Image 1 (spheres, one colour):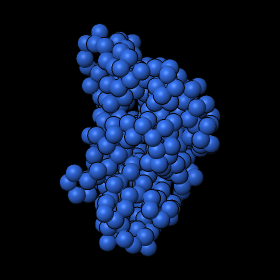
Image 2: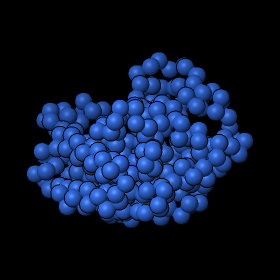
Image 3: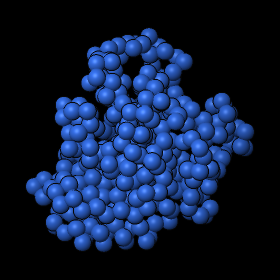
Amino acid sequence: MSLEKVRAVAEKFQKNSAAPLGFAFKDLKSGEVIAYHGDSPFPTASSYKLYILAELFRQVYTGERKLSDRYPLTDDVKAVGSGVLQILDAGAELTLKDYATLMMTISDNTATDVLFNLVGRDNIKKNVIDALGLTNTKCDYNCAEGLDLFFDMRGRSIEQILADNGGVPPSYHNSKWYQCITPQNNQTSPLEALKMLEILYRGEWICPEASEQMLSIMLKCQTNSRIPRYLPPYQPVAHKTGTIDRLNVDIGIVYAQPVGDYIICMFYNGNLASKEDYDNNPVGRVGDDYLAELSGEIFKAYME
């Protein structure tokens, strides 16, 4: 294992990035941390679902709820974007574990909003964000609300937005939401995401069983185009991605035995790149590839 090689890889990607790149890495054996813009706030996109999951499990393990509790799928909670529940008929009664699994494995926005509305934004702030001293982290909006703000939807459908903009996607370059300069937002920093993940790894979120159950769900993540893409097949990674416009995020734990385990948190904010780079990055493909390559090289350097 060569942490100097890991540092060199991280520095190279930081220097060559066309957009603000938030990065935090921790070797869980030595405790060494490497970070760039580690305390800077970045939009979370769907990676904020980790904090929702944390509050859900807190409520479960304090006896307020059970993972086996069933809640009906209703039309009023359906959210656009990722997931399958939005296209299913209303009426299905899923367990809280089902909703949590859909939220974390395929980033289902409707499942997320069921849980967010149920556990409560004030509880997420009080019991997770404030309790852990996460001063750069905010989880103020469910998915439907967040998408409406970040995409300036104002209640319009995607089709209506395109029609209003002459049939082409509008630009969200340098939007205030992506700058994280608003009083409320869905945002975190690389080091605060790392802190949450390490608490889970150490079995310290509520109790070892709760932490283990959360990580077991995250190990089943099916959106694997970033951290795991250039890792060996079947490499265990407990992680959560996030994507919105040109923003790409992946935060997770790589179980890189026999060498060791490490946490890696990556945020590529393509919305704050130059206008030219923004326009040349359709649907965030540049950031997706960049983070995948960064992760792959970090893994290779760590394993040497």
